[in-house]
Image (cartoon, rainbow, N blue to C red; front, top):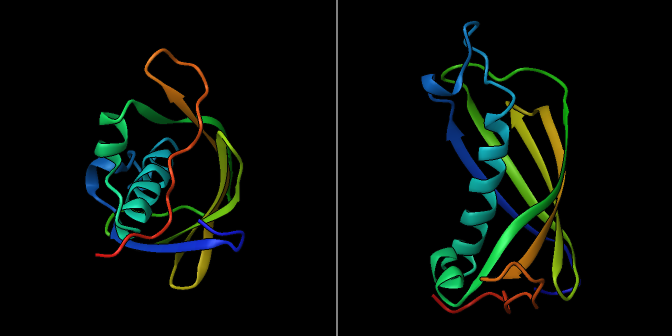
Amino acid sequence: MSDSPLTHVYRFRVAYQETDGQRRVHHANYLNYFERGRVEMLRDLGHNYKSIEDDGRMLVVAEMNVRYMAPAEFDDCLELTTTVTEVRKVRMRHRYQIHRDGQLLVEADSVIACIDRSGKLTRLPKLDPQPQ
């Protein structure tokens, strides 16, 4: 990854089981959406998250801050934009924005740390785009 922000867009539809009794997305499900965005970003870069774990490294959430502006509902088509905003030796920061028809519904920031199998911080793998 370079010094410039890396951005990925993932489009999906809200499933019924992701909603509460009012057919609105339960707040905890947004964390799953953010995870999906990070995994799909890696995949589009030519990396497989499973291979990173098989190599003994895990990318774990160290911090997550979420701001909810408006609810998403069952069957909504959503657009999740995931942006890498900073990369350090053992940590990276992401910004997430979820939109429905151009309206910002949720915004979040995370810190993802890289650890080894014993739980010790370790250097991030090289995540530059790979030829497909």
